[in-house]
Image (cartoon, rainbow, N blue to C red; front, top):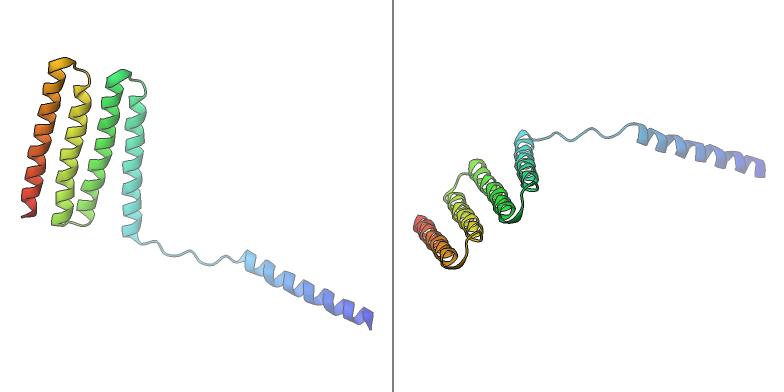
Length: 145
């Protein structure tokens, strides 16, 4: 009787092993990829790769030139993302975001460039950058109306 029980258990284990092995051999079919999603991901990856390339180019620079280069790379990435969003989903809101990004990027780069100067020239440069930013923000605000 024990021998018969042992054979039945062995047969059951081998059946379970065969079934689980079969499940591992045949993977489920791959989910279809939506072309729009693939395009979106490819564009985002390209923007990210461009940023990394631009950022790597800045590593060879020193002092404030490096800081300006980094700000330009960040700004270029921010602009590319905003413009891509506008391209994918054109709307007034996304158009404003593009305009806001341009203003913010221009200000951050101008402010970083002002760091090269000293004294009165630096304060004048910063004031001009802030004035340009305020003017740009006013234009963006006018777009909302």
